[in-house]
Amino acid sequence: MKKNKPTTPADSKLPNAGAVLQSAGAGLPSGAPSKRICVIGCGTLGSYLIRRLLDLYGGAVEIIAVEMGDHKIRNEEEMGVTAEAGNTNVASLGRYFGLGGTSARWGGQVLFFDKRDNPENDPIWAEIIRINRKHQQTVLEQLLGNTARFVSINPEASGGELSASLKTGVWLRYNRRNLYKRMVRPVRSRVQLKTNRRIVGFQVEGNRIGAVVLKSADGKVEHLTADRFYLTAGALESCRLMLKLQADFPELHQQNTGKNFGDHISTELFVVQDARPVLDGIDFTPQVVNGSLVTKRIVALAGNGMVGFVHFVFNKDIRAFKFLKEMLFGKMSTSIGIKDLLQGAGFLLRFAWGMLVAKRLYVHPGQWSVQLDMEQAVPNSNSLALADLPDRYGEPALRINWDISKKDKEAIADVRNQVEALLRRNKLKFKAKYDPAVTGNKVEDVYHPVGFLPVGSVVSMTGKVKGLENLWHFSTAMLPSARSINPTAAVMCHIEEHLEEEAAG
Image (cartoon, rainbow, N blue to C red; front, side, top):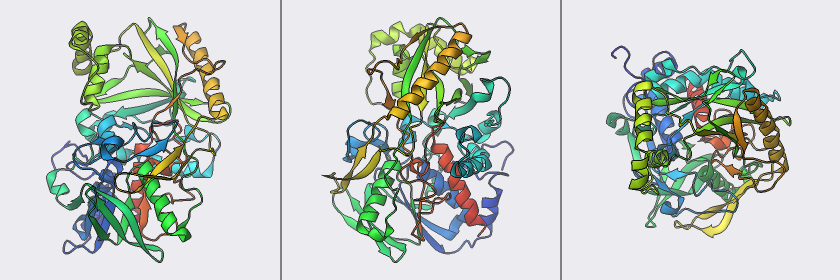
């Protein structure tokens, strides 16, 4: 390997951080595969898992990936998969199907849990944070390659009150967010790929999965046997499959499956006018590092113990910027006309200069918004269950019960007051957008589904489904809450912990 060659899932194994997996894989036989592995779902986490399984086992395993979609990323409606959901768009707008999954459409911000996410010193959270701290550098290097050297993820930040509350995140570069496509052709050729097939059933033999039943959109059914199964079909579809498995095999019933569904609840708190995004001397303008966008957020702690984060939204009302986002996030059409683009030519030139030369996001000086994303209270009454409504495959859809509780609103109001004090301390001119005294505030979920297949009760810290010897699950649903981060990369740390356990024998 040449010096300084990027180390990503696309082209190489990790030096140092991944040495334990390399050495384990190197000692395995190179002849006929000794183990057959089925990965259910080849989205973001499925693609990450497949690449790392190949790092660990090499040619000693046969990997079969089952994906309901194909090379085109599609939403729920396009796939013919529906959900009954009254108050939330998490299913219709927040999940996508196809090779690379949801992050291939929305992008992915890489963040990790740290001790600030555990104000109550809960032992389960302490273990989650330990796993995050242990493996976050490996995950960073897998996702960012050499860019990881220039990104400081520092959970022990110190200094002033605001400085100690900062958390750094990294938006993946546009052409690097689809983890399936980042696997080079020789790597992909080592995986048997079954696209346009959905898991519709399980064959259980004692406390083991013997086979899964696959169904294509045209109704063709086939059975797939394996020694080991990984369920990485996204939080919602994975939960639907777990609920279906338990309905067919009541002895496998897990009490907490589908319960305590949480999300980040998001609301705009303030609009700041005629000022740069600088608070207590800290500039929150996103920086460009090797094509990735490095951002800062403020970890927020409400008086009732709930955790969230304050972040800043730039250029929201600039129509030319809206056009750029629509194109980057794969929309096939745009609401922006030629006239808007011509009027925004000056902004587009400044934006291009900022990204390519100044290496920072250009922020229009007129205004920027302060946004709060808050975790939901746990336990809660939100839940996922199987509905009577069949989808295109004849499968029961999900029924999603989701709402915002009184405790959720109390946390928002508390943090809002903290942020207002911060803005006043910095003598900024602002307009309040969220008013706790009224009921018409715009508060939405932001599609970070968590809590309904939790570690400790449904799965272990290394993803093993309790009650079954050969089924593992990895999705954001295994996390009790989203706390102060976009949670996908945190789940990758649990994948790394599982693989390290495997390498140790």
